Amino acid sequence: MFSAGALLLCLATAGTTASAAPAAPGGAPADSEGTASAAAAQIEVPADVTAGVAVYDRQTGTFTEQLNTSMQFRSASIVKLLLVLDFFRDRGPNYTIPAADRALLEPMLRSSDDDAASHYWQVNGGAAIIGRMKGDLGLTDVAGPPAGYEGYWGYTAISARDTVKIYRYILEQAATPVREFIMSNLRQSTRCASDSFDQHFGIAGSFDRPWAVKQGWSGDYEDGTCGPDTARNATSAPQSTGREAAGAKSTGTKSAAAVNLSRPALHSTGTVGSGDRTIVAVLTLHPLGTTYGQAYTDIGRLTRSLDVPGATRPAGKWYGTWGERVAVRGAATTASDSKTRLPAGVEVLISCQKQGETVSVPPYTNNWWAYLPQYGGYMTNIYVSAPDNKLPDVPVCTS
Image 1 (cartoon, helix red, strand yellow):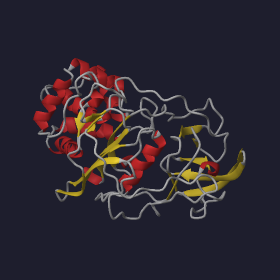
Image 2: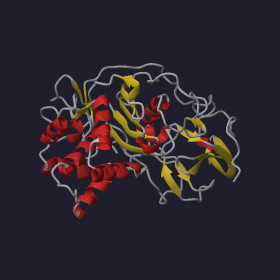
Image 3: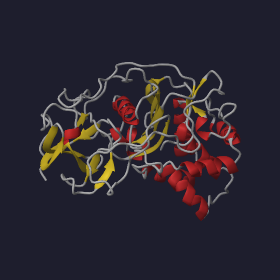
Image 4: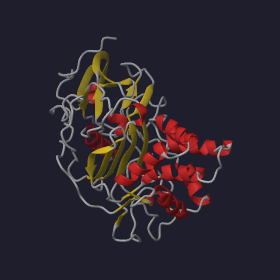
């Protein structure tokens, strides 16, 4: 979720192989990756994006990808993993979870609920939590929020290598009840976070299940628009003005020089493959003014370029989209209720297409609809960045 406090320490630029922006209607298809199953040869960091990456294969005990692994980023909601570990720290051998706590911890892990994180930050000592976890887990790069922002838990500093250590602790050292509680909830990650941001980017958008994810985002993004919207029958509608979720800031002047409080952050962390084979940590910063849809697309391209043992890549073709609040519907008609709405300009995976209701968005008219397997629904091809109504390299749906 927007991961209530979020932040990054240290900035450093590390960009390689930029991907072209999605073509507008009438332009070339935005399919810079080729087929979704194509193996990537190197980490592809879009232009002007700063990234810290670590991919650890638990089966072989080796890293398959490493980039800026010690660089500190503001954690955003990734710190929630430490909050829940600290919650269990002194709970005794049975690790009983009171109903009131379960009602907070489950949405904090599944839907990145910020109010829950703020509660545990306040009642368990704030930055003292970070100190305890740093010692218990042997973390190297984590640090509490900078001076002047002590209450902003998302400003906790974290690195890709420490993120891998956190997951290794959960999977390999934590008591069984703790491990099962955390991982089972991360496997139930909801597409729509509690603040209505689509949080199935990065790992969740690049690989088929099984996976378990904890995502994070922070910055001056436009408001989240994820989720069904039966009140609107239009295919696309404007988004509201951007604002920050409680507990997070995107700008500031009090911080130390090493702490960046302005660049939009988007992080994808978790495990991929049977038996949680591979731990993946992708932490990113984006240029000021980057939209959520563009950051979502950039972290997706980066994540798809990684060597992730045990991962299964979904079949289909990746295309850019345009428009705001574009609806994904249960059937190829605007009469069908929307399942969710896409982040503006996001890249999507299309597995097939079919003819349906004719939609007109002057000067465009189109009766072809694209099926998005990761959303389980259809969007009109009008909003797909491609020159023709029917996509040339996508098969017709058979059902």
